[in-house]
Each structure stands twice: as structure tokens, then as C-alpha cells.
Image (cartoon, rainbow, N blue to C red; front, side, top):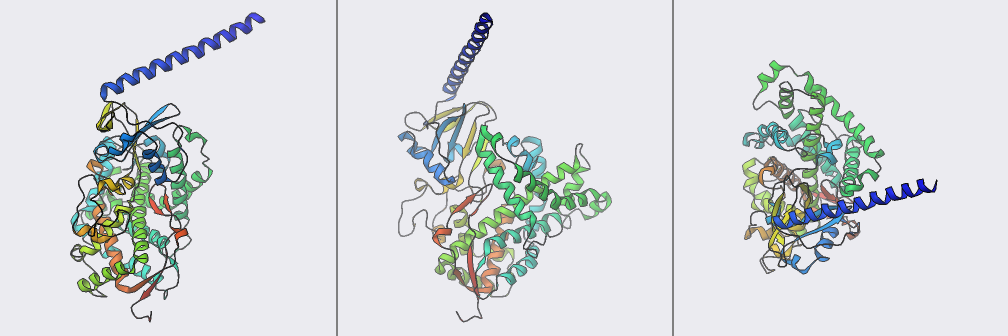
Length: 494
């Protein structure tokens, strides 16, 4: 019995010793591979507090070596895994694969979660919808805008315009891409909208948990997926029922993105239902949340600065008057409108944080060494996080403050009159091969919506307070507590 005890103890000791030797050897091999490729970024201790998102990035770059001030890149280890975080434009340019396994249950195999041929197929399906002839046809927004305006016209009483923007953009996106509106503006208690938000919330927690993802409770996540499925299923059924002859006749301007998906599924093997579902979820995330979030922040800033609202309204009335529907050319001919949208996207980029994984052993061009300017060695499958929002808010990326260039965090559309960002300094729509294919459509939708609201209402009233001024970053950035404002039309005595 005693001999058995010592045998078990000896075997356990040998196992632990072997594991330690293997771990040391593995770390040494990784170390020399990293040194061969470049070096290390300034190191941060493994302990990283669970703080709010932007605070996390400031924490990263303020608790590491002094050299980080010259290149915003740091690294740390968590649960034995190496993580690199960067807000350096030179490093953000790199191409990496996306996090499929963490996002698959939510987004499946769509444009946001795939690489290679799968990603190219998803992008190709979208491309015909965003040619100039389709983008210029702004009539698609008018009915939804008029419905939105009727809800906003409440003689200055408080309304959460952010919630309405999310419903409005869902309606516009479903009509433009799927052929018929979800009519969520006419249904204030949309189960889909609530489920979509909850699924994104839990998905974000899962992504941030990293190796501890298995500890995240998923009951509300799975329940939300079921609600989403019931909303999406009629569109899936519609796509599967489409007649090939009818699709061929509609090919061109009359065809929708759903028509393209239906046609594509007939020429491929695999689960057509799952493929269509994945494409719809991805495009709804892109078409609804990003635009609604940006409109919410724009009107939040406009409500806080009546001077900017008045100046914008003056430009709109001079260009198109108080009634005319603006054309695509009209929107392009309103520089102050464009400056307002650009400034909103600068301070509040729709996707504030992103993650890539190294496709192979490689190097980041900057951030290593004692001076912060040497390459950083990156091994295959290393996780690299980057933040467009931190980059956009970093004073070192901008000219010095002056009369013509206000502080970086001040909402000032006028700064765009004389300043143009350098490449990769301003990336609200990402960049490189994965630049957002729908960016011109999104800007047109935001511009059209803003013009129609400004035409109708002479004044905005701010009801939100400093206590409401928090950001919520799940997949897409949004105001944490909505945007509570009031609208006064031109006929009111205000």
C-alpha cells in the first residue's frame, strides 16, 4: 500500500516536472522566434482590471514602459496567451484573420467572420447593391423618414431619438436589402430589436473573456438567438421560394440583395438555409446598428451646441429649402453637413475596437525595442487588438491646438475646413481590403436623414444630462442611456 502511494506520488511528480520542462522549452522557442522576427512591445503586467472600454485602452498605454509614448503598442499575457494591443496607424494597416470561432454562433459564416473565398463571396453578393446608381436612389428612405418625423414632431416634448434611429435604420435596411420593411417604427415593442441588443451584449462579454469564455452564462444569449431566428425565418423562406426565372428577369436595378443571395445559393453546395441566415444577420448588423449609432451621436452633439445646429440648418435651407427632398448631388454639395458627419465618426467611430489574429509568423512594423520604433515579432495565431476610437482621440495624431484647430475632444465640424487626416489616421470604415463596402450608402443615409430632420425642425432642446453621457460599446458604439431631446418645428413659438 505504501509502495503504491509512493508510485502515484512519484508519477505525479514526474508529470508536473515534465510539464514544467515542456512549458519552459515552449516559451524559449517562442522567445527566440519572436526575437528572430523583431522583438517585444512594452510589457504590461498580467493583471488588467475590468474597466470601461476606453479606460481600458488608456490603462494599457499609461501602465507600460515609457517608450510606448512614441508608439501606442503594448503586450501582456493572460492565461498563458500573448495579446498585443495597438493604436498605431502603421500597425493597424496589417491584415489578419478574423475571430470566427468566438462569433460563429451569433454571426455564422458572413462577411464579418470569414476570410478568403467565403469572405470574397459575401462581399461579391453585396457589391451590386452599392453601385453609384443604387446609392443615388434616395427615395428608399423617404417613407421611413416621414414616419420618423411624425413621431419626433411632439412640440418639444422629450423623446429618445436614439431608440427611434435604431428602428428607422432597421426599416430602411430591410426594405433596401431584403425587399420589404420590418416596420419597426410602427411597432415600438419590437422583440427583435431587444433580442439583437442582448445577443450583442453577451457576445461582447464572450469575446473579452478570452480563454475564460466558457464561464460566461449564455441563457439570455440563446433565448435572443431564438427570437432573432423567428424574425429572420420569413426572409429565409422567401429567398428559398424564389423562382430562378423570376430572378433572372429582375436582375439589375429591380433586384434586391436577397435576390442575389437566393440566386447564389442555387449554385453552391451546403446548407442553403444556414447560409442565407448568416448573410442576413451580418447585413442587419451593418445596416442597422452602425448608422443608427452615428446618427444618435450626431444629434446628441447638435442638441448640446445650438450654434452648430443653426449653422447646419442654414446650409440646408440655402441648398434645398424647407420642403424639397435632397438628391445625392445636393448632399454632396453641403460641405458643413459632411463635416458634421465626419466629425461624429472621428470622435465616435461605429466600431471602436477590433481584433485580428496573425495568419502566420510575421512582424508589426513599429512599437518594439527601447525606443518604441523597432519591429515587434508576432507568431502565428497571436491575438492583436486595435482601437479606431483611441486612435481618433489621440492628441499626438493631430496638429497642435490653435484658433483654427480646437481640442481633439471638442466636437467641431469647422476643423475639417482646413484639415485632412493622413492615411490610416482616420478609419471609421476600417481600411485596406476589408474597408466597408457600404460606406457611401451609410453616409448618404445619414446625410439624407439629417437634412430631412433639420428641414422640419428649427430648434432642438437638450434633455439629457451629464449623468447620461456614457458610451456603450458592444459590437457597435452607442450612447449608453439614449439621447433624450425635444424638437420644435418652424411654426412653433419657441
